[in-house]
Image (cartoon, rainbow, N blue to C red; front, side):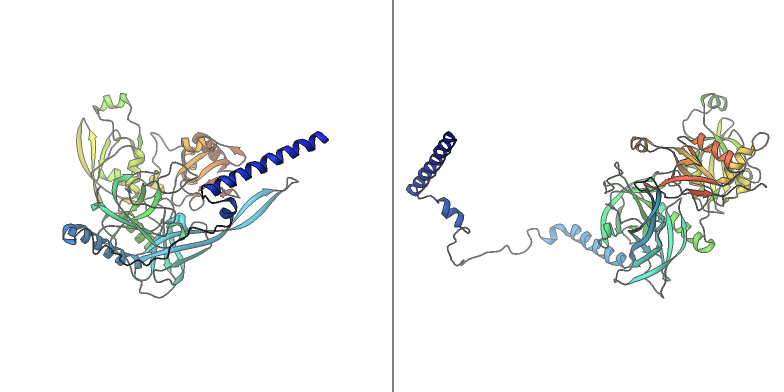
Amino acid sequence: MKDGYRRFLIITIVILSSFLIVTVARKLNESTGLLEFINHTGPDFTEEKIKNVTLADGPIIERKDIELLAQLNNEYSRISSAVMPSVVSINTAGTKNAHIRDRFGRVQTQTSNTSGQGSGVIVSEEGHIITNYHVISNMQEIHVQLANGITHEVSIIGTDSSLDIAVLKIKAEGPFPALPFGDSDEVREGNIVLAFGNPFGIGKSITQGMISARERSISDLQGELFQSSAAINPGYSGGPLVNIYGEIIGINSNIYKNDEKSPNSQGISFSIPSNIVQRTFINICERGKPIRGFLGVASQPLVDDMQKKLGYTKEYGILVSNVGPGTPAAKAGIQPEDIILNFDGRAVRDAKHLRGIIERSEIGKPYKVLIWRDKAQKELEVTIEEFNKELAIIPAASEISKTERILLNVGIEVTFLNNTHRRQGIMGVRVTRVFDDSLAYGLIQPNDIIYQVNQYRINQPNEFYSIIEMSAPKQSTECFVLRAGQVLPEPIIIPQLKEE
């Protein structure tokens, strides 16, 4: 024990001696000591009046040297001040249910509040607003805030979930500042555009860019989107994309993201062209629902043997396998074994591409169709009609099968999941289309992921169709759905198919 005290005493003497030596050395060198350093409150300043301060005077670049840039700067401000009064911020609120298990394994339903933000644009003096369907989907409360700060309740006039469009109307007397539609068919790559919206709910904002590409496809029903470099972040959805004349040429819809967990802008954004939006808006206002175009052909892939038989060497186009009687295609003279090359001046890539073009075409309008027949090109004219479920049932060589009739009446078309979903461990099939007036219409939505039907887990389209074929005629069908990254708490019930 005495040795321990002795060591402690020696260490203490060494430390104190070192401290004393350092202090003496600092005094001799007139350096700040430890105590002075601790008590020091900051540097010492000598009070001295500054007599001369010369600031730069005037711009470093003369206005006459950048006249075009200055004029462009003013024009951007003019466009912004003209457009902004028609842009609205949309605030939504609702509730969602989630199933949780307690420590005893019992399943309970937990209700929580949810909210969201988005944007919209006023397109009529009566207060009609266009926004995205996903902005207001499954929300019980919807309010819009105008540019002057006044908030109004709105009613939902109609929606088109496939095109991601919703039409609202302000519950107040107008007139309201409406923004005009431009002609999106006149838009070209390189055109200057401005995007308006409410990013992250912080308030109305504006970004500038240019059209990077046209007819971009992000789903089977959204195949003619504009791609632009205008920065669009969450909250811009539903806001207008305008040209230099302040006209709506698109509705902000999506941003490109390579990481589902980080949805911020990557500098690539997509907008729904104004001609499609305007036509959908008119249909919803007049009919209460979107109207789809219809041609009436069945198709099959272009295989090598059939190409050789028909003397066709190109890689694009679709082969017509059958034509429904009484359909627009039949009236136009389209025949089996015709190859549709071009519709309304646009080359047809495949059957999905043509279907998207047809469904977005104007009802009652004649269109030029270029086909390949008898080893030569031939031009026909077809007048698109409204989708007709009865005419859409195209008989096979003998008669339509019972399976095809069941699937058509249920009205769900699905495809495989992409690699991104699979890397995240998601299983199931993705909905590409829901037929109008079908059993699933208004229940299932495009881009829903169905991972289970009744008690059966599914992972590919043929499994889904087989279960639907067995279930639909006998009972109501339960579809378990993943929507917008969230598992719906309850299965969606598709009614039983009644015998005709």
